[in-house]
Image (cartoon, rainbow, N blue to C red; front, side, top):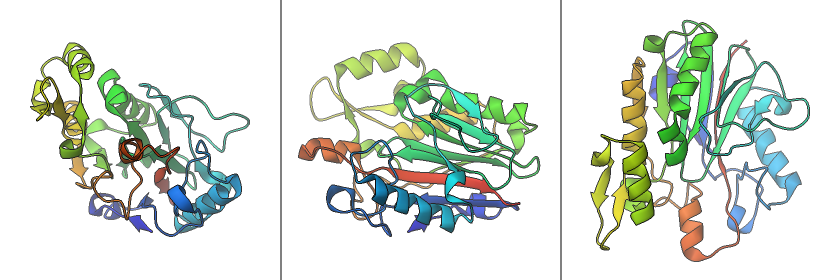
Length: 255
């Protein structure tokens, strides 16, 4: 049902999970643990899936917190379950025990953060746009506002599309090289002329290392190539399916 990272499991006072698509009640293209409230899946089934995730993290269902993700660089501080609409942002941080910060992905990078000593955690949704514009750095900065130290922060990248499955075209190449100068090494020439294979996990790791955090781990799991365990937006697009399920990656402080 979920995958854990030794780099986080070894930290005191934390619970975390990179949930797979297994262990839920959704059917068809959403089978089976679809956590995406923004998908067109049956809302009752999504709610039950998220209840199971909350139970696995030992938090109340209402305490599995998500934001309205918009590929932004924005990180918000969470003090409790939202009242009303979810804020538009792509990262969350908290120092409140019993809240699980849940990021939704289906190829983009889910990054879970922790400074166990300061008891501050974070979670970020890092697609290429968010990574380029600074969502990872924003998460670290927001954690520091709650008392974390960047050199004490451990960050783990969960299931993400790998370079071998991520072909990009001329428009992407032009924009990326303009907005992320000095990072051209993450673009590898593709078989198709004018195209490249983009290393999103490598780029995320480089940004976090440049931010000076204590440790970074990439679990090396590809969403596109492992259909049994992971949803993939790109795989769905290639198959011309109408929608796709969403994976949840979450972290919580124990009381």
